[in-house]
Image 1 (cartoon, helix red, strand yellow):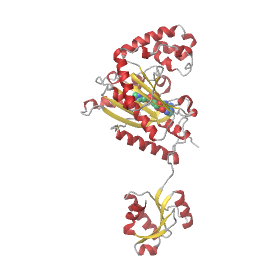
Image 2 (spheres, rainbow, N blue to C red; image 1 turned 120 degrees about the vertical axis):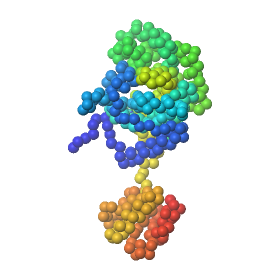
Image 3 (cartoon, protein in one colour; image 1 turned 90 degrees about the vertical axis):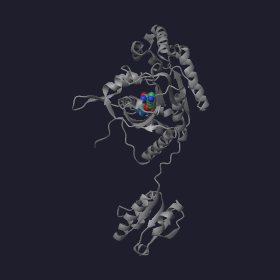
Image 4 (cartoon, rainbow, N blue to C red; image 1 turned 45 degrees about the horizontal axis):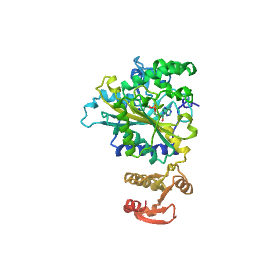
Length: 421
Ligand code: HAM
């Protein structure tokens, strides 16, 4: 038997129903908040991710699926969605759109070569949004509040927003110098990754998974004390707008995020589900005001976030949030003879095209077994065809709950179902 690759999984049956439900809520909220859907390729040139995520990020160092195609082009399965969206924004000159800012959302599979565990897969799905062309701190607050409102609509509780500001370039430069000075004397007591990062990306030491509990990290200088006037005012405004939107948050100076492109606001939404362990960050994002110009586009302030839908659904399951994943049909059409079958086929199509969820018998079952099948499908009505009724232009309809049977003129079946469903 050929089995699925490690770190991937199949979604089917009631699980697939949950995914559809979650996706429907996401689509609905994105339209309430005026986000347009964007689809970018699942693979992009490898260089794109090296230039966006950063050479020293875990993603680029050890997690990407890289390959050469038959034309010797170096390509990478996308590990995240922001890089592709920014590339597309520049390549398609969306910065010329009259409607500003450009508000986009995506929902698709991403690939990271990680050690599979609950909430961490090699193929996973992210839903994300990116707003390009506005530096208004209100946008930061909108981007933090949108996933919270989606999670609440799904019934998710135990949520916590950790927020921080990495400030502008000047603030980060001053802070990085102070951090290096502080860490240098104790670096031998930190892990090998931290030792390397002291030279390449000292801020990342703050969210090291190995040394998280170390006092060296806990007592490190805080970036919030190094923000210049402008960065501090900006951060205060974001917090004010979050208050106006009634979003609770915790300022966490150690939230720095694993990708190189961030400045100013960064945030993570944590869902407290013990089975998720350290994979309990269900959404995260931040501002990246320099990324578009670094990829040779025009200066464009931007911000976004992404949510791991796999993790979200795992959390919904563990917290026993009630997502109705039961299959439900409006009617099941039953018959025995071949002439009845032809009628059933025609009738099923008519009703489906009128917007009803319809199934018809198609496994040559006995009438008794067809009743059982209708129950399995949770059919509200049974339409039991027989030649005599059909000759009179009538249908025999049974309400599967009350067990009441009625004869309905076939020409009036749509109205009948409309009134009773
Ligand atoms: P990220 O923090 O790398 O950010 O990923 C965002 C979310 O994707 C995580 O919070 C998690 O829920 C989910 N995720 C990441 N890796 C895995 C995995 N191996 N298995 C399951 N779920 C996973 C980004 O990707 C940024 N592009 C977010 C962003 C958008 N920033 C600005 N705009």
